[in-house]
Length: 256
Image 1 (cartoon, rainbow, N blue to C red):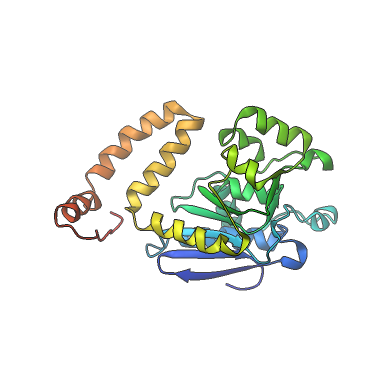
Image 2 (cartoon, one colour):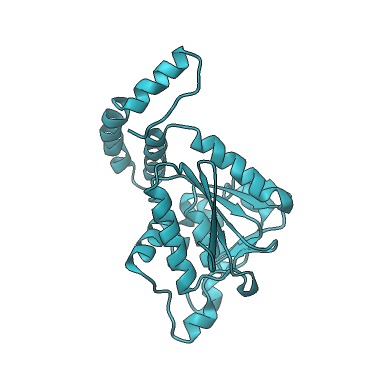
């Protein structure tokens, strides 16, 4: 896939790169559609076990909504498949793990895009913010749920002042998982994604769903745990994991 989004395979990892550097990688309808299609395709491809989401350039990961398109009345619309996939990414509902590789600053919809990722590696020069209140808007693409990842006081400060925070503080409050020099962001994110991708697909999907639900809906998490425990613990992969441990070899996962 080329154009607004560039993708490449790296073993079991799909790297998806926002590719609008001249527009600060702003989210227009075409890019949103391309992201949604790419993550849906990855989720349905058993050869892909993790996604790394990054961007072109070395200063801006994503500046959020394309305000030029928005002001002209062009809204962020696309194919139903693309929009559905993009929305599921923002809500953290993809079954495939997603690693954010913030090569630069992420604000507005750009930060919301990262909030949909499971873990985030960021450049030490990056900044993170939700400035929508400064534009007469509010972060309706998932930004108001930032309090599920960071302390409430910090979430309210970021959303109500609209002011960004530096990468160091973002790490301190738990918004991101690692801070590295800009030139190391992709390699660090890829290494993390490969480590994740080496684990059992059914177990990964289960922990991703249950850990997120444990924060937002503990009752559903408890019920989901009962259901997933039955299916995951009786799977071929569960038997393979035990056998590989006993035989001192790497497991061969089948995702079933």
